[in-house]
Every structure is written in structure tokens, then in C-alpha cells.
Image: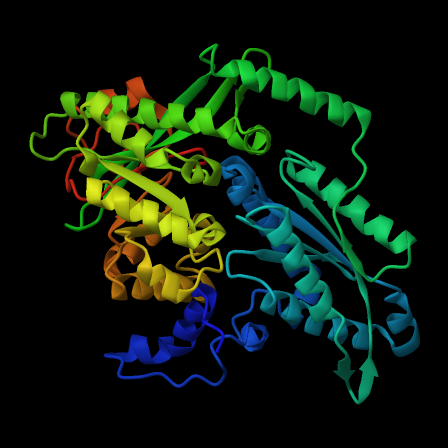
Length: 507
């Protein structure tokens, strides 16, 4: 039997929500196997429906995708966090419209839209951008290989026969895919790269999936220059951390429990650069290891300063470091963490290390072993971007983690969107059932905060409560009592058991 993934478990919980929300759940009726992910397309809450044929909804979908792509580019963290953009275009679709009319063509596209939604994770965003062309944003792809798997799944889904008004159609599609920042650092550059790859497929007859294969001399020279500058940046002290406050909801009123540190490169010519502009190169060159080690050590120094500054004795602020796979998987990582804690004088339970689902899936046996040693040392562990990967429930239960973070892609339309609201509830229910605390990222509205408070979310972070700020500004807030809703003022502190994340990405 195929072991269900976290995505499959979330799907099952979504089916059970009518019973769960009605009262105490004693069971749930599932109309399909847990592993039958393709059946997701039948849900009435799919973001893409037949109504997407209207220009109004098409425009709205494109705007939503663009907004989420910009946020994903800002928060990209190397291979695990890199977004990908897919351009899917049907081959010779005009023959459907010309031969059977636009009504039939629209019906085919509506069915294709459902299939596209059904082939994706909940965190991915599709949009029809006109005619027979679709864009799909894949967040937290885990690199080129997983992204290509999803792209091929999309091509296969839309290439199955269509039965419309007694007629059967067999279509094919050309699918171009571009990854940030390898094929572009902006939404426009990624779209251009993915479209170029799709067009190249069409010139060869279509019905395939492809990454961009041509890198201009200018792009190659730019990459080499950036790599050289990146190698010098650490020695020249050009990296810096900004801090975004994080709050517990345990007592109803948000209480500051730490901060997420966002890595920035203060480039002498380009200015303050977000992670998406350089983390991919850092991963590929191995520079991510010394950069990650610097983040860990600077974070420990910072948390020691914060606790010396705060006027709330006995309620220490905590800090965590979001790890890259190469940093975590290297020989001697446990010893490096142990020695860094000893040298900094910070107690182990004030440090939390965050791993993504895809990191754990790379080498689960070794990962679990190292994680258990870290837990025995007293360090807290959590899973970042929970629900966006494909780890199994069996593996998740084995992990010695204390908390999970709901990815901001699941929070963007809560509580307005029934679909996203149901997903957030399912994640909260699953994590709490497994005895884990839940942290929600990307909280930007009062309605989102109210929803999370009522539903028992343990902690939150986002622009509503505090934007990223330099450490000197963050430290100044620790000595002045004020409302937590004022992001430029100070915050009450509380709850030492929760931790904030020091990462290379942001909300």
C-alpha cells in the first residue's frame, strides 16, 4: 500500500470538514483512496472554474498570481524555497474553436482548468491568462527536478480525452517552466523565460515539458560577476539581518516571543538585495554553508542582546535558524551547533532550528538521527512551510519536532476564501492532533488574526503586527510598553517556549 503524503492527509481532512465544523467528529466518510490525488479536481472549491472564462475573473486571477509571485520571489530561500513559473499552452487549439465553436472551446478550457487545479498542491496558484494559455506559480519547489515532475503532471492531466456534448477531443500541450533566480529574478523575467521555453517546444511539434536552455552571454557574465562578489561579501561584512517580530496568541492578546531575522545583502552598487537575487548561486557554489553558519552565530549573539535589553525578566525571547539542506547534511553540523551555543552562552532551549519538508525527504534516516541528537541537547525543532511538500504522515510522526509553520501561501485569502480557510483549518487540526504547536506566517489583516485566535493557532507573524526592521530598532522596542498592533512601537513579551525563525526569506 502506498503511504499517504501530508498533501493526501490534508485532502482527507478537507473532505471531513463539514463533520468537523458541525461538532465533535466521530468519523469521516471518504469517497476516494487517500493516495488518489488526481481526484482533487472534483472539489467545488477549486480556484479555477468555468467562470474563469470571463475576462473579469481572468484579470483577477492574473493579479493574484502576480502578487503571490512577487511575494515568493522576495521570500525565496535557495533551492527549497525557489518559486517556479509554468506557462502551459495547448497545441493547435484553434482547430477546436474553428471546428466546433467557441462555446465548445470554452467548455474544454473550463475542464482543463479543473484538471490543472487538481494536479497542483494547495500552495500553488494557477491563472488563465487569455485564450488557451495558463500560468501556474509553484512555490517552494525544492529545485528543478520536483518542479519538472509537477509540470509533467500538468501536461499529462490536460492531455487526457475531453468529452463535451457527446464529442471526444484529444489535445496536447506545450509546457515551459522557469525557476527563480536561475531563469529570472523578477516576475517579468520568469514569464519571458518560461514563455521562451514553451515556444521552443511548439517549434519542435509540441507535447512536451522543457526548461529554458539558452542563457545569453550577458546572463552568464552577470552570474559569474555575482558569484565573485558573493564570495567576497561575507569577508567584507556586507550581509545583514533584519528582524520581523513574532507573537504568541496563547493568552488571546498577541505577546512578543521573538523575531524572524531576514537575510539581506547590502551590495555596494545594487543596494539592499533580497535572498531571491543570490541564494540560488549560494546553494550551487556551496557558499550557503558559511553564510548559514554566519546567520546562526549572529542570531545567537542577537538573542543574547535581546534578553539583556528586555524589561520582562523570566520571560526570555527565543530565536531560531532556518537551515539549508547542505548546511544541515554536512558532517559535523551537530558539533557546530553545540559549540556555537557554548561559545555564545545561550541556553539550548532558546534556539530553534527550522527545516523544510523537502530537506527531510532528501535523506530521512540521517536527518532524523541528527534531529534527535539536537533535541537531546535541548534545541527546539520545527518544520517550515508545512503542507507545501510531499512528506508522508509516517515520517512526520517520527520527527522530533515541536512546531510547524503554516506557509503564507495558505494564509493569503483567509478568511475570505472558503478554500484557503478550509486548508488552514485542516493544517491546524492535523498539527494539533500530532501534538505540535502551529505558527501562521503572512498575517496581514485583522480578520486573519481574529480567525487564527478563535481557531487556536499558537503564534503568528506578519505585516499586521510588525514589519522587518534593523536590530537596533527591534531592540529599542523591548524597553517601551505599547500596543502590539503598532508595528513601529514596542511589544509585550511572553511565553518562552515558543521561538521565532531566523531565515533567509520573509513575509
